Amino acid sequence: MMAPIKKKIIVVGGSLGGLSAAICLRDLGFSVSVFERSSNKLFGKGAGIALNPYMLRFLQRYPSFEFSERSLSAEQLRYLDLSPSKDREHPAVFKLSSYNSLYISLLQIFGTENYHLSCEVTGISQTPDKVAVTTSEGRTHECDLLICADGTESSSRILLSGRDNSRYSGYYAWRGIVKDDHLPPYLVKRCEEAVTYHLRSDGHLLSYAIPFFETDEKGETVRSTYINWLWYRNLPSTKELNSLLVDQSGNRKSKSVSKHKVRPQLIEALKQDADGVPEHFRQLIKCTSAPFIQAVFDHGVDRMVYGRVCLVGDAAFSVRPHTAVGTTKAFEDAIQLYYALKEYGNDIESALRSWEQKQLKLGRQVLERSKEVGESLQRGCWSSDFLPPFGLYKGGDSCIWDESTESSDAV
Ligand SMILES: Cc1cc2nc3c(=O)[nH]c(=O)nc-3n(C[C@H](O)[C@H](O)[C@H](O)COP(=O)(O)OP(=O)(O)OC[C@H]3O[C@@H](n4cnc5c(N)ncnc54)[C@H](O)[C@@H]3O)c2cc1C
Image (cartoon, rainbow, N blue to C red; front, side, top):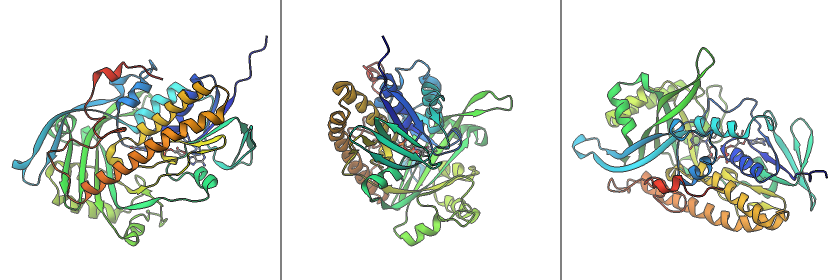
């Protein structure tokens, strides 16, 4: 007897949200292909990502995900003041990773056979039974379900909904990573011990240590420790934001200017401004060769499902980074999609409708909480008595590590 033909899924976007969905749904028996616009794998990119028990529940199903190799632990929360006698410390355990480390793990799990680079989706159309996607090369591919994981600037979302409702939050972040051997050993130790904040009336700074994977001169993958830092600064004027987002070649970027593209005079001004922050952050900033800029935007959708097409991760809701769950939320969208499709079997549209109700609720909750926390942190209203606001379903569900979640039932 011939094996039944597997239903086909195309995932638009091969970053963390797209790969987690692709892995989950392949496990459920679908034939899954990932279309990624970038011509190169996303190895060398990104900075720090806080792990969340919900994300770990998913990753620990795969033996190739080596938890201890892919993350670092910090066992304290530290608030630094300009006057060191007012510094505060609280015991709190965090598991910290990096974009690069998670991306490598997910790509290893999914494999590269059905991961297509230089494959930009430019058109979507559908009949009641099938979805057709067109790529920039002019080719058309059919599938039974299309998952759009194409990020905060999702062109799929705009194609489907006809609008983009992103709103600038009124602040942006300078970000950087610096390798441990570029820093004094005592500072590396302090960065490894604690997630460190400095609260100001006009913003806040944050640092923590992350694992990072690089290829050495022999072509072997080696793990290093980098320190990840962020400086969130208020900038209400969109005119000033627009000028900040002009890169070295004079191009106006929409939301971020990546490493090595930021104009040198802006980096010089940043390093001068660093004279006004505690020494811990001053040293991190001054030792970073290629800081980058990311403006903070909010956006959320009213619909995540259009027939047999759905939006996941940042394409649906892009939340402010202070809750540290952008990636976890993308994983949760994927895991819940797995459950819905498992429950409804071949009835993809009913599965999507049921999934959408839950994920819209989650997305709205996280978006609202991330806005509240962001306003509090940026307006000098956050207290050094508070634990950080990391959390998916509720504030704090990522920072106090509950060992039992590591072995709880996964997908
Ligand atoms: C290179 C990179 C580095 C990042 N680094 C960090 C980090 O250090 N810390 C952090 O907290 N978050 C980081 N993020 C964001 C983080 O990945 C997301 O917030 C979260 O994981 C949800 O991801 P996502 O997959 O929904 O969206 P994203 O991660 O934004 O991925 C969207 C993907 O879709 C692709 N794409 C877009 N349009 C198309 C199209 N038309 N056709 C095909 N592909 C398309 C993009 O190239 C991208 O790879 C990074 C994202 C990227 C892409």
